[in-house]
Length: 140
Image (cartoon, rainbow, N blue to C red):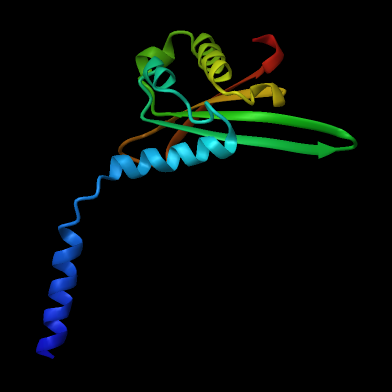
């Protein structure tokens, strides 16, 4: 029993003293994702700062029905500053779409970009509000 405790203690001590840097691991993971999806897939900090967004997410979608293919980029921007969002959210959505399409090297493969502003109530996370704006990528 004493040997098991010692081995367990030694294992915990060695793992807790690990000097790895999570920021470097995350950067490496994002670089790998961008290598697969295309340069600029991950939204830039410029987009995040534009609305002071807490979270940024991108989904790519291609669907086919009746010989018609629709391809869409979904840019989800979460918990932005309500004062910035409240003034002309459509203008802000267009600017975010423009910046994303400028940076994403495979943007020409998609027909539409949908920008979603998602606000979550900090006291009740189940209470969510969303505004959605759809743009044609050829307009940029």
